[in-house]
Image 1: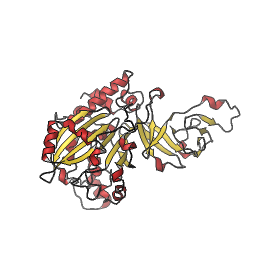
Image 2: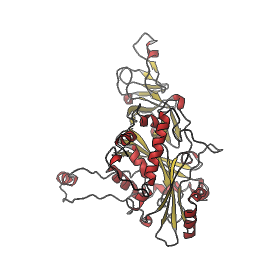
Image 3: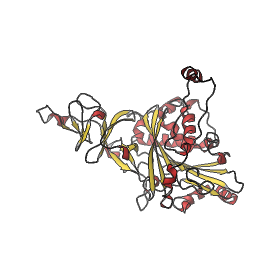
Image 4: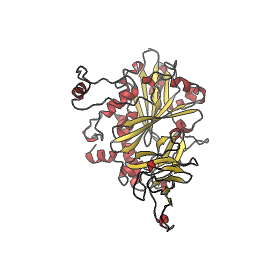
Length: 423
C-alpha cells in the first residue's frame, strides 16, 4: 500500500474522502440507560459534541459550544425543548435551533442563528447518531444482533489509543487468535484453515480449527459489518458448560472514531430467546472473561520499566506481561501499533492476511463510490420480512467429516445462520 492510500484510510475529518464515507453510516455514541437528566461531553469524528436527553425523553446531539459565547453546553440544563446554556441561558433544541435568547428584545435575532446538530435514535440499548447529509440518511439498520428477538446487552468497553480502522481490521484476522489469545483460548491454538468472502454488508471469514479433542473441530464464522462492527461468537467461554458444545452468545464490537488517533468502543451481546436465561450467568463470570470490562492495555513506552521502578520502588524487571483475557490481549497488541498505522511499511502475507487486504479493498472501493456520488456499501441494507437483517455469525463444533464437507463447499457455513445453528 502506498503512503497516500495509507494516510487516506486513517482520516476522519469532514471533507476528506474517508471522513465523508464514515458519515454515511449510523454510529453508536452512548448507552441509553446512562443518558438521563444530565448532558455529557463527547468527541466523535473529530467533533466536540454534547449528548443530552430533554425532559420529554428525546435524545439530542449538538455542537458542544453554545453559538452565543462558546461556553460548553455540557454544563447546561436539560429542559422540555432542549438544553439551556449555563452561561447566559440560550436554549438550543435537539435540531440545533436557538429557541430563546434571554435579554434580547429582538425576538427575530434567534431565527438567524443555528448550531450543528445530528439525529439520534435508540436501539438495543445504544444511542446511534448520523453525521452525514440529510438527503443520504438511511434507516437505522436492524441487524440481528441489534434487533432480533432475544436479549441484547449493550456495554461500553473503553477507549483505544489508535485509529478506529486498525482495531476494526482485527475482526478479519483469524490467525491472531492462535497467538495473541493462546493463553486464554487454550483449546483453540491450532493455526486455522481460512476462507474469506465479500458480503452485502462487508466481509466475512470462516475459520476451521482442530481442538484439544481429536474428533472435534471448531467452525468460527466472523462478520465485519461496515462501517466498523466486528461480529463473532463468544468462543464458548462465557456460559458454564458451553465449552465443547455450541456457543450461543453472539458478540458485536464497534469502534467509533474519536479522531484520527483514538476510538470509542461499545459491545452488544446477543442471546437468542432459548438462551436468554444465560444473561444472569454471564454477569457472574470471572473478571478476565467479562468482555465489557476488560479492554485495558498494557502501557508501552520507552524505558517504561525504569520509570515504574523509580515511581514505585519495586524491583526492576524488564519486559511486559499481558494479563489473561482476550480484551487485555487485543488491547495491548493493537495498542502497541503506531496510533495511525503506517500501512505502507507493512509486509502482509498472501494467505494469512487475505482478510486484512480484502476489507481494506472493500472500504477503498466504497470510499471511491461515495466520492463519485454513490452510496456507501451496506448503507441501505436489505431486510428480511420481519425487518431484521440476518447475519451468519458464531461458532459451531463439528466432526472431521463435517470439516471435510466444509472444505469442499465453504459456502455451506450459510446453513449455520441464526437461529438454526443454536437450535
